[in-house]
Amino acid sequence: MLLSERVRRISPSPTLGITAKANRMKQEGINVIGFGAGEPDFDTPNNIKEAAKKALDKGFTKYTPTSGTKELKEAICAKFKKDNALEYTTDEILVSCGAKHSIFNAIVALCEEGDEVILPSPYWVSYPEMIKFCKAEAIVLNTTEKTKFKITPQQLEQAITPRTKLLILNSPSNPTGMVYSRQELEALSEVILKAGIYCLSDEIYEKVIYDQPHISIASLNKQIKEKTIVINGVSKAYSMTGWRIGYCAAVKELIQAMSNLQDHSTSNPTSIAQAASIEALTGVQTDIEKMVSEFRKRRDFMVERINSIKGLSTLKPEGAFYCWVNISGILNKSINGKKLTNSLDLADALLQDVYVAVVPGGVFGDDNFIRLSYATSMENIIEGLNRIEQFVEKLK
Image (cartoon, rainbow, N blue to C red; front, side):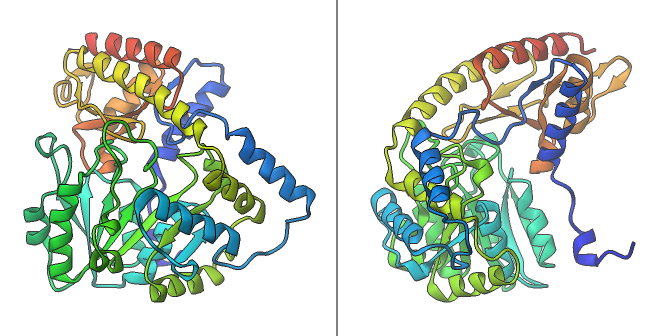
């Protein structure tokens, strides 16, 4: 089959691939413990589901405007004002089929062949694929535990060239769970404004945060707001991953361009999901508090348990629901005669030997790590980490 070069550039999602492989083993009756999940393991709150049922009963099942209903965009504007001290009008908002769709729209609308996109590593796995799709080039900035996996203003300034179009910033971060402080964002914003580039601020994990407030870089001042595309959605905060509602805020001209793109691709997001999302954003928020409280307990246990296993270590995540685990202490060891030379070797061996599914760090840009999600029960976390420890003890 003669596929286009643009499509042949794209790799399948490795995180979804790991989950699919683990699910196949489960269907075969194998007791697999999965640490790969990128979604909360809680049900969508009842008030949100009831709003969807009411929309169905009212026959709200037809097309809506491509960019989202007026009511949902007004709710999003109110959310930005309340949570982020950001003032947007409805024509500065675009509702899409998930935050991933919003990010794709933004990158396609901004970037073309020859452009450079600055991408801090570790990064979410879909960013580089979207950049490749546009025939732009990802300029990867490697980070370390020393800076809590966050880029410095000096790094950013040195990476900028006349071809730089965009910086992608993800806070709280997938996969590291790290969060940029106001002071760190202010320092980065100075570099961004000096260079005149755009910033795509992926804030999808905004509500899943533990020990400090979430700050949107767009809220710092009017100038940086005009250069920022804020990405968010209802999937992580309200356990609505399958509802596929994301949204973004930016200057009108960019939103209109993204809406034009959406006109000729997906058109509007699902009408019923939009109705449910209004309730999510405007209704009671207590379910978020309960979910984050449970995630905090799991996080604290997982961090302490991982750091007790010889050869493994992790920093305490400040947001999201992932532990970014340093495996450099066990790489190049062997099990069953097979040498573990990278994170993929380790992920495969864990799945085959002790039936534990993790995501290899190489797909996030750093082979010395694996990602473990604690969006699973405490029972599974305890059992899974016990199996990992048993596995590590068998390495030679």
